[in-house]
Image 1 (cartoon, rainbow, N blue to C red):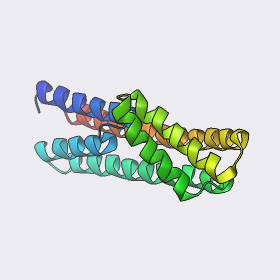
Image 2: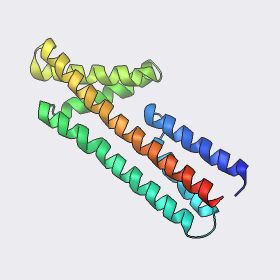
Image 3: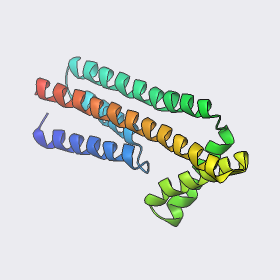
Length: 161
């Protein structure tokens, strides 16, 4: 494979990593799709093995992204309705304040849900902080999985060049 194609594929994977941090783009899906395209364009079985390892890392990261924060949210007693308000707040926030509004709206939605549930602004603030940390841990897990998958691809691409 020529260097230009590898650079384009690497750029697409970098955009996927940005998509993990800015959830406007389908981050891990873009990384997986780019890895699949690379394996398809390369010859032999080795690229498919590299893609399989990448894909496994991405699947494990995606599962961990949801399971670990969900466990934390269960421990603090946050119901699904609170998370739904957080998602709705994120969507509204994204359109009111592009990009940054996604985070601000999400946090505001969770806070309103917890304030309604708990009836105390201090308790709602503590619960919102715990929820925000759990979501941040989920994003960190997703970012690590994406970085690891891109690293696996880069090592495979260099080894097969």
